[in-house]
Image 1: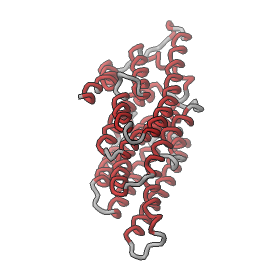
Image 2 (image 1 turned 90 degrees about the vertical axis):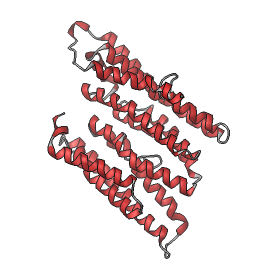
Image 3 (image 1 turned 90 degrees about the horizontal axis):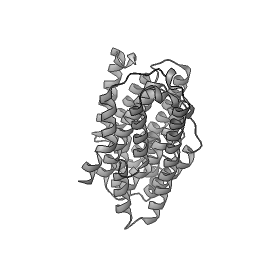
Image 4 (image 1 turned 135 degrees about the horizontal axis):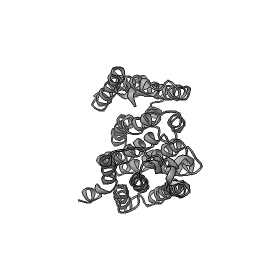
Length: 335
């Protein structure tokens, strides 16, 4: 996509990267708020890159949700340290809600699937990976300091809601949005165990799986599960790679996505056994709609006339690296 290399877009992307690093390294709440605002304003032009009405609607929804989260973050952080605070016991809860709203986590997830369904796959990739980095880091720091018991409720709610709501969808972007919400539940389970680095490792593995998957969907311009026959226009290797990536996201052994989930189950088994059941139920529901995507892709492959198939060229190195990402990281994690 040519707009990704225009000077204006490169400037906004560099500002977005810098503001995220500023937010992660900030030492006070005011500097953190300013960095998050700069990040918000730099991401809006990327959302509006194609200038379609649908992306304009998605960018407005994103701006309103993030502006509400920023307002709550600024107000609660000021009131938290003010000697004249009103209802000081509620300020940490409001601060947590503001971070959850910026992260797109349940129960403040209302904007996330709607925005994901309205924007391009390139913007979806950035929104699901880089834009979650700063809020996730803030949430990890906040939970470590406050030791809030609500994190167990949030973890279970994310896992269940991401699975239940994703089963009723036909739009691929919406499905991947609810999948991201489900994976947030597993990341929060490590926060419950006071293992912040494991949460970041899980997030890194999740990003390494969705980025090549979203790139292929962008290449074929997929929007619904009925259009999965376009995958055949790439190559059988690409079809196999997409299937492996989806199964790895579902957490099937021995793929990469299974390893952090296995570690979470082993760590939770001694202290938080009920949470394990909720997380596994959510993961099974995620597996259901992942398998639905794979089966639709395989069935459409059989129904196509292969003589009339016009293949799209794609780098074999990209397919090989994507397959290695979904399968080759497993031994590293086990070590």
